[in-house]
Length: 352
Image (cartoon, rainbow, N blue to C red):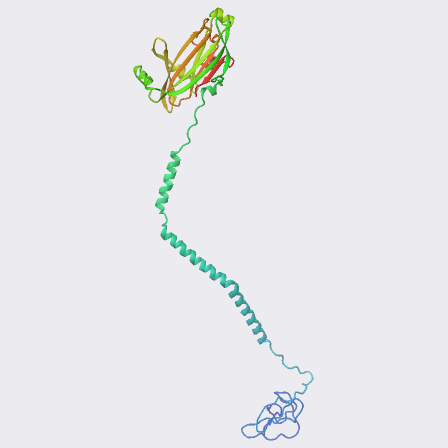
């Protein structure tokens, strides 16, 4: 008859003392036969820790665990389930972090990007881009304008500035004017008080325009400049010899052009008319002048002079003045003013 372990029901050899399955030592008494078809394990006698079986119910109870034989080590349980649980927890935490922090920003960025794309497309629809040809044309026009636009050339330095000629006379100012009075001895001089009484600038009248037409002068767009000066002499040399009052007129910008082109072109009973050329607003124009003077008083000691100029409207280059005649003496050709200028002997005023 087959032998079975009384503890676990494992089939054993007849001569086995210990069960190969549970390792329990088998009782030495004879074993009852197992019923046909099913061979339940006979329970051991009741010991602490066991439960009583209910009648007519087969229930397997864990057998009493006896100490294992010396040197026997039960197999260690594997920790595979614990490791799997830890990995699953870490994966769950990572997934939650992604959903909480990464996904919202990504979704927001994606939404914003889509919104910007839509706005950009709308703007492009409303405002079509310029074509490449238009840009090229604009660049060409810009280059052409740059080439065309050149810096204006600086105006040339005025001659009065170039040669350091001083403008030291003005309206209402009186100065002591010295000039020679003896034709034979330039060192014999007389001194008087020179004063600029008035200066005016007015548009030409119809009468002056008609006068110009009668004398070959086109005075449309001209102005009339008029300066009144007086010199009061009275010393002994003047009483004995008189005075040689030396007047001058110059051009502030171009001294040589005036000296080279000045000419008398008509005479009247009382006045002598002179004209000279100037460069004004890119054109060659004329300045017309005449002077009326007189010695008044019982002893002719009061010298009066009125100098008049007809100039293109706005021209400010006329200069009038007085200087000591003994500088040039009786010479017919004194040259240009910058050749014999002496700041102590000249009084000059610009009609600007």
